[in-house]
Length: 409
Image (cartoon, rainbow, N blue to C red):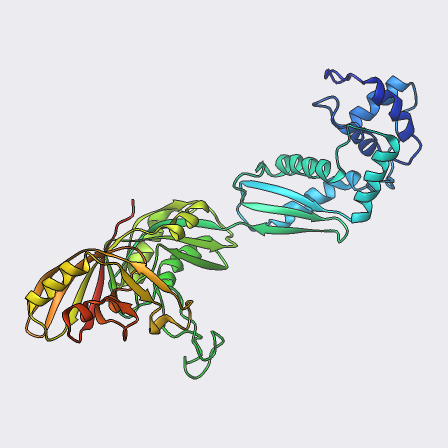
């Protein structure tokens, strides 16, 4: 049956079409020379209509096309390879592409120039489109470029499909109640994660972490190969994270399952955390949230236990002065091995003594993001100026530190 789509052939197209005849093209590649004409038509249908208009026999099918080499005739094979490549993975959205021999693409461009067409569509573009349409039909999934679950890359010269499985993301807030727990997996410094006598073969400095505690039930639920943990900042290992918790995004790599019932995950988290970590506001997230979490710089509130022989009146006087001055903090000695050595300017925006006893006192303070609180209290051998120690004129030592709140929106 004749396709009802209107197909007006401009005189210039009718003049250059005969130049493409007899060049060993398949109907797909002949029609694609005029792919920008007749919107809604397939390229073989364009070829048919052009030859009818020219009054010449139809372009014959060939498995050895001068341009594509018969690749378009083997589309069903590439669909099958794509679907089999994704076997064992849950996917609902996909996008696809292809890798071609440069010589074939150059041959096509040369043909366009020789024929003089102004309406050509590239073989790669047409192949990707047709492959996507057929994968949709074969799988029931939705093709496109927006938030795909998987990406198919048809490597035509090699004859295989490369599959990329995109991560899945979950977000929430964690409270850390254990002063011996790092935020993320901490590889052994001696063996760099390979396993040695120092770490008893575990490859880790600490047996577990907030990341591993939270990730475990998600890895079990999704069959993921690994994780990345993105926190809105981080607290020291010996600091607790209290209040509403610290926002985080958990990225699960190469997941086999994407649809997760969060209730069993919450229950497994509660059992596995054993009172060391609590997770709040758990939900499904998207990739852009990683950027939002990593780039956020909210103020933070702390409770700080300090040892030092200084009258509380002197502490209060020093705090009043501290609120009026910017702090210059050179990278602390304790993190200088992993952070660039530079001076950062920060501020303490609120501070008060909440408890005082002979030889020690407890502060609650609120600071700008990125403030090294321990160093602000102790001075870090003059690398933080002014420090509370310098303002009181006394040697001070932080005994404990709790993050009370992350003031994000």
